[in-house]
Structure formats: structure tokens, C-alpha cells
Length: 243
Image (cartoon, rainbow, N blue to C red; front, side, top):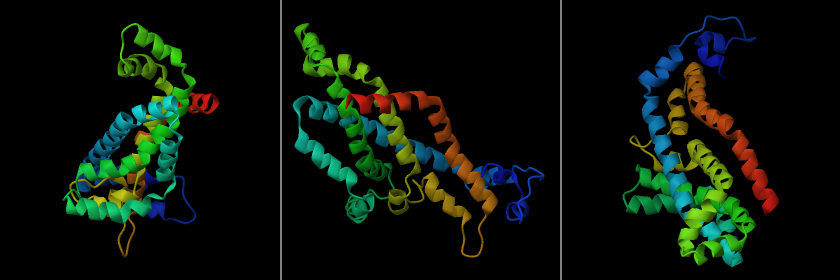
């Protein structure tokens, strides 16, 4: 994919494939110039960051509550919401957001992505909170802290690997999501996976532009995965063992 993005269109579709070619940046100029991928990248970034932030905001207290107060029924409801295929919610979401006039807004995309991101964060974080002894927050409360203060100042710093892991995976899901974006976005909020369709037409496929667009979508996620892989593995392993 990366090599093909630097080939001429004729070299890309040549059979058998050729490894000796004259490299060109034409497809990348096309992606960022003609198709304005910077705008699509900004939309994807805002939606992925927004859905991850609000999922953490709601998911961390929910995970703590499930772990500390043994709310197994609530955990089961959240698990069912996670298991149900996202396409089940597609039509109800579209009708709801249409009546609220929120189609083609960041709000509709962030809320729809939280449908998957929030349960995921909760189920990743529950084992981390269960692994922390109650004596930690009880000691903080004896020293004058409230329960919420103990949660913020004592427990959250100790669950850093889990928070980082669940944040990255939630962000990656939102960045790559196609299903909700294809229905709920418009010209103002179109994301990268939808923008790829600019290179497909009824009679022709712009393979060079498609390869360059795929590289643009993949590189940020690849960089995040490489930089944070140590923390992701540590977080998932710690959660599995402690759970």
C-alpha cells in the first residue's frame, strides 16, 4: 500500500507488479489539495478525541461503582449493550438525531461512537478497580478526603495503565469507524473512512489516490500503536491477571 501510493497509476495496475518505478508525490498532492483531507482528518480527530474523553468521563466512575459495590446487574446490562451489533442502533439513532436536527454535527457522531467506547472502557477498567484494596480509599477518607476525592487523587493515578490502554483502543475504534459515519455525517463532518469514497466511481477506481488516502488514515494510528505498545500490553495483561 505504501509503495503503491508513490507509483504512477499505470505502474499500480501493471501485471506482473513492477518494483522498479519512477516515484511520484502526485497522489498525495491530490489527496491534500483536491480532496482536502486535512479537513477530514480534523473531523476524525475531533470526533475520536471527543468520544474518548466523554466515555472516560462517564466510564471511570461507572467502572469504580461496579467494582466497589458489586453491581453485577448493571455490568450485565452494559455487556449486553456492547454485544448487540452497532447496526441495530443505526436507524433509531438516525431518526432521533434527525428530529433533534443533529445529523451532520459532531454531537451525533460523538454520541454514537460512545455507544461502543463507553462499555469497552467500563469493562476494561472494572478489573483494575477490583484489584485495588479498599484500605487505600478508606485511609484517604480517614485523613479527611471525601469518597470522590479519594477516587480522583488516590485510585485514578494507580489505574493509569488501564486508563491509557482503554483510551487508545477507544480512540482507534472511533478513528476507523465507518458504519455510523456513513449515515450520520454530511459535508461539514465527513470523516476519513467516508472520504475514501472520493476515489471510487462507477466507471473507474483511482488506485493511486486510494493508496495515498489509506496511508494517511493508517499512519497516525500506527504511530500511536508503536509509541504506546508497551503501555497497551502492560494494561491489557494487568487487567487480565487482576480480573
